[in-house]
Length: 574
Image 1 (cartoon, rainbow, N blue to C red):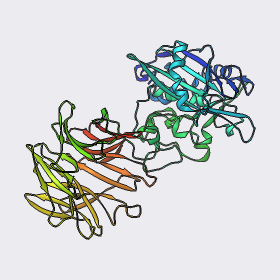
Image 2 (image 1 turned 180 degrees about the horizontal axis):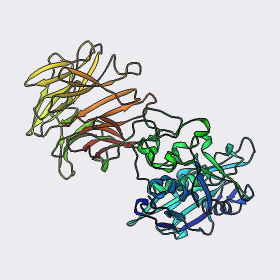
Image 3 (image 1 turned 120 degrees about the vertical axis):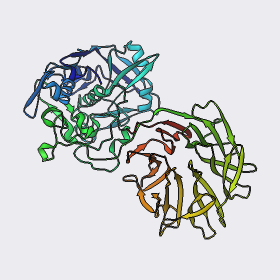
Image 4 (image 1 turned 45 degrees about the vertical axis):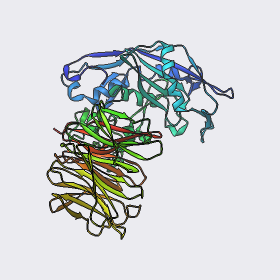
């Protein structure tokens, strides 16, 4: 976060701030200039400089004054009021009075900008492609000669970046990161006041204040006051600490600050305990948001409703084999050996074995097979998987000490071995001539079938050395009408493994501390990985296929047309 820790006493931090006006020239000759175009009687630059973003304003929240100060400083003082209101009364984080830099011109390429018109007023609403505008950031900042100690604010004026009215982020050069903000400045009469004057800038300012580098993660959150979804609304924002986003869809979140010649608008903002879901907020008056906009409608100030968020992997690595478009890791053992697949030039799956450092490895290729798919590896370095023979039928296999052994369930059409524990017990599935699919366990040379009652499709996908088995099953074949649902078998006891709010849950592995990794699918076809930590479900971006006993996880991650092999570390379960 920006500034000092308010628990450490009264300190004032002043951030040198520069404003960079932008002038957009469209291919048809239309020009939109933040430094000269009037918006509600003044230019965007004049409006921002004269607003409570930079000028003092008396902020009284619930009858308590948090200061005659700038908006962002008032937000942060109120946010940490348990410290500020007691021992750190003179704590401040302030923006310096801004230096306005020379206007920079952006020539918008053909097809990357459009001019729409507001339905009610007929005023122009130009927009430029967001990816294009973001691609200009480094050049804009370099031309302005800003430094990492400064906050540059690029002002677009009456312009949006696609459907975005502002954003904040950082660029990296050498060993330093440069934070920045880009913002629109619209008339209060257009877009039903959705992005009136300094509303968008205020939104980005308080988000920059609490997460300048976009790397402060939360447990996940739902839209304030209105949402109680099982999967957090914040997944579209990466569960980041976006202090304005939880209220941005609510019209009442646009707050008018009256007084003086002009009325300015700022956003409602959520305090820290909205995200922690603490029963008692440490912020001013025990609030979970700055203006408590629900109070006028009898909606209590409250933290985010319970929902399932994601965990971020540390030291995450992505890689491909021989420039393959499909690369996936399915298993990892406690020594850091990983197994998975890649596609060859003919589009066939080939297996690989690597150590976790990727410094040594080998192909896993069942002799004479069309495809070889290794699934898991145990701590004795025994690999299990399945291969496709020249006739197109599948067979399980084991690979140990350089020797392949085929494995088939008696009487089955196809067999796939999917996991092996330290005891040598193997689980997987097999298909029968009646087109049913059954799970199986192979223990001490004896096969046994694993079926979920009333389901004709069951797959046992993972087992640990404690004898626990995970998998998934369906009443039919896992189509839309009969989705797959996960299960956990512990001896004779069966329990569901269901990701909250998901249409399908597919567990793929279980380790020796009973953490489960898998994939879930929503009814809208959104899909992602999941993991359980201390029994609680979390989303893991990508697909999660395997995990060891020390928080290492493997799977895949798709970017564009390429699916990369993925590995990383989970947060500690302690």
